[in-house]
Amino acid sequence: MPSFDIVSEVNKVEVRNAIEQANKEVSTRYDFKGSDSRIEQTDKEVTLYADAEFQLDQVNDILVSKLSKRGVDVRSLEYGKLEKVSGNKVKKVLTVKEGLETEMAKKIVKLIKDSKLKVQASIQGEAVRVSGAKRDLLQECIALLRKEIADDKENGVPLQFNNFRD
Image 1: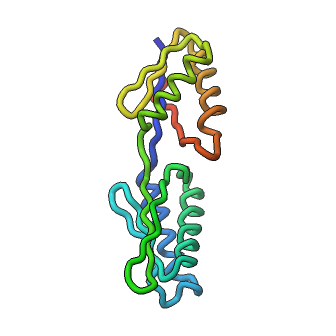
Image 2 (image 1 turned 90 degrees about the horizontal axis):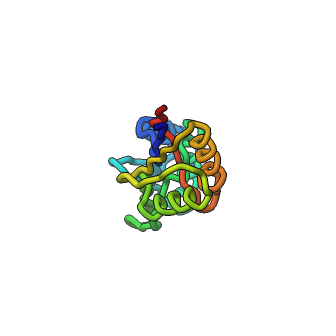
Image 3 (image 1 turned 60 degrees about the vertical axis):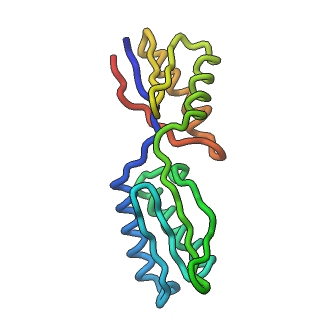
């Protein structure tokens, strides 16, 4: 029976490369000369440091441009609060979201069932498995999900469709 998985993943290598490129640009730009602006990465968090809130916004813009050039969907970043470190220095923690949250997975399953397509959707951990009798039905399901969820700019989630099997 043909099936595929709906997941929300981020290429960690591309994220690391984008952070390295952004750090390099920040270190060479004239308007950051003499400042302590930088980007650091832990496993699932990216921390932006700057001397002022304005510079922090510029560092964020540089990071977002580097991520989008490398094909990483910036909707997978969840912004934390702006924190004062010492003096005028500020930092902001960004969390890299991976996997479908339970609430979003339930929304996807409900959307598939409401569409009256003859496919079955089931939640499996941080992914949703969709199976159907024909390959064409699965492709219709992918098109529906792209239109309804993946292309929604405000509250959309970056979705990938993998493990397509016949």
